[in-house]
Amino acid sequence: MKHPEDDPQYQGLKVNKGIPQPPSVNPQLKKRSRRQYTVDEYVDGILSGNIPMLSQAVTLVESANPEHQDVAQAIIEKCLPHSGKSIRVGITGVPGAGKSTSIDAFGMYLIKQGHKLAVLAIDPSSERSKGSILGDKTRMEKLAVEKNAFIRPSPSAGSLGGVARKTRETIILCEAAGFNYVFVETVGVGQSETAVHSMVDFFLLIQLAGTGDELQGIKRGIMEMADGIVINKADGDNIEKAKMAQRHFKNALHLYPLPESGWTPEVLTYSGYYGIGIEEVWDMIHRYIDFVKQNGYFERRRNEQSKYWMYETINERLKNDFYRDEEIEKLLPRLEEEVLSARKSSFVAANQALQQYYRRRNKI
Ligand code: GDP
Image (cartoon, rainbow, N blue to C red; front, side, top):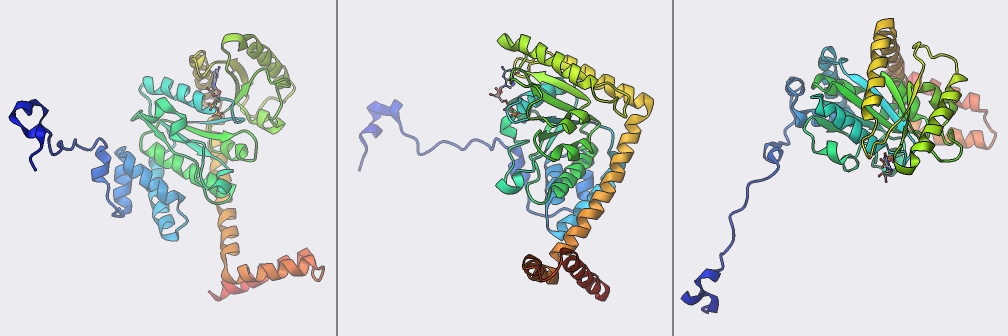
């Protein structure tokens, strides 16, 4: 049937069959291949700053698959000589303290100076929720669209030790890919601070003013780990309160012994949201780095960290091997029952499990 719109008098209204499809806006989409690269291809890609290759290598680091792990370890070993040249900053604070807002602001400050920044995260809760909020791109709107920023959420599976090891290995890959600043974010409420502290050069604690007791929610241990404390949201009506909190924290820090670095932690106020005082925070971090490089602590801390991670990796591997052993998996519930019904002591049961494990190992 002839459509009335096709009549010559309505030519201007001609309905087209369709419009040409615009080209893909994501140039990576076409290049993506399912092919597994060789170790050398990964390493070349990472060293030339190829971000999709870096991302895929990080996925291998995070994988529980033993084959992936072997490839990941080989990549890490080859990247190791090209790593270590970044400034690694740990950032912690309770939820709502403004970590993402601040990381966005701190990160943009660096990017504008021509630096390359990787933002990683350690989020122990992601173990349960099977997905991490920390390090999520949507939380850092400005950085998310910067080509010189690489944002990676927390690895989600495994124990805190395992998650932290993966993040530390990811730091090595990011450094090899040319990122000269690395942030490792964590929530300031649990054990994960110790893990982050053991992989960074500067540990920054973000605090808030006006919550009544200023030390609320922050464990003494975390205060002691901090190389700098920054009080966020020092804007509008909150400036005076932030200054009060600053005095409060300075006084509290006086009660602690001087840290091994020889550096007295500083307390600053700033506003991540309005971008006030960001330069001062970076000035503090850079002064600290200069200071510890000069007195030798920088090198010493990194060496200590390498040693710590060697033992952590051994511990994790031993534990995994033991608990993943098929027979041990079957034996443990039985032993547990015997311990609970007081037929065996904890010590005897543990010994029995270990002996069985070693006997099996010797046979292999
Ligand atoms: P996170 O949970 O620690 O990552 O905190 P967010 O960065 O998500 O910030 C929590 C809330 O505080 C958000 O509503 C932010 O807009 C707000 N916020 C963050 N930084 C500032 C700041 O400097 N000033 C003010 N007034 N609000 C801020």
